[in-house]
Amino acid sequence: MKKMIQTMFLVAFVILTTASFSLAQYNATNSNTFPYFHLGCLIVGGLIIVSLKQKYTKLYLSEAIGSFALYAFLVALFTAPVVDALKTLIS
Image 1 (cartoon, rainbow, N blue to C red):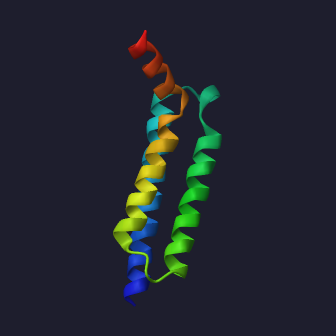
Image 2 (cartoon, rainbow, N blue to C red):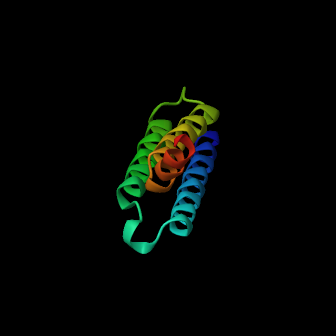
């Protein structure tokens, strides 16, 4: 039962993080430059982490949430608005 509850918490975190990424990118870009590939990578990465959490009992909930949070940060780091902001910051 504990494993099921932890998996549900992880699924909720993945869904909320993916939704916030989508909302932020929708507000930051126009409809022509929405990063669908990045969103797909984020969804696939979330599915993989959830399946790993469900398969391996020794994987802690905090480790799974932390790994997905870092993965989401890295995916968001390489989107067009962030790259443009870094370009203007450097030059």
